[in-house]
Image 1: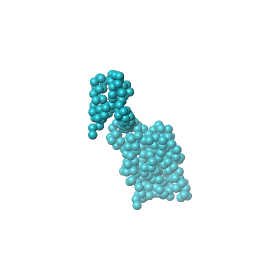
Image 2: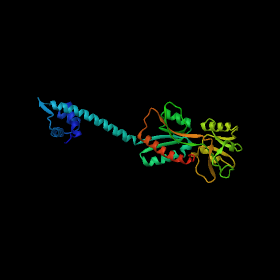
Image 3: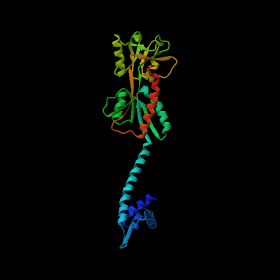
Image 4: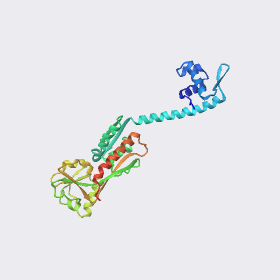
Length: 302
């Protein structure tokens, strides 16, 4: 079966509205013979007489009325289809705004941005690092598309997607007396000066609780607001309690798990009431795979 040409249907519907070949040709920027030929072709394809002329005016036949109604429904659906295609095409272009805490931003998320720019060359990415509280607020306010933090944001407007988990590690010089231990406890650390994270951060609270349960006081000499800073601050017998993802491999430093295990859960944040665009969803998938792969080497051995 030969199906009608969509352009011919558009001309047919305009002719139904104007009842004049001349006016139809004028409004569609066509010649009168082109309009007449389109209607003739449509009648040939459908094998239905669409119009009859009465008193020098065109009138739809009974079958023509039925074809008109079906043509209107069909072209409405075609309009929806075109709009959806345009929306999908636009969603492959544009800009994604991303923020991550420093320990994630300097490693796995930055790598994800690099991979994403190769796979999606038409997308621009605005990427930066910030603290968890600021990231949560900006996601909730729709000022960024996606955020990466440790722990729950506890915000009603944010959708949280768990990705993976690491644990707090002890970062120290390879010459440190504890550097050969398979794991390190609060008791082991009690004689040594420590570098800890911001006192308000959840890991810091849990670290202090671990010392308290052992009947000890954590000898925190320095507090930093990002584990990323610790590698440059470690000296001699100083030990930094860090997120292992924040530390680049180095011959002079070693990472050893802290016991008891203090989890650092990684979450992707998006706005709860906003459906992520195709590029945002694709970037989240890329980042999820990279973060998961990176955290695997820090999982406890069976």
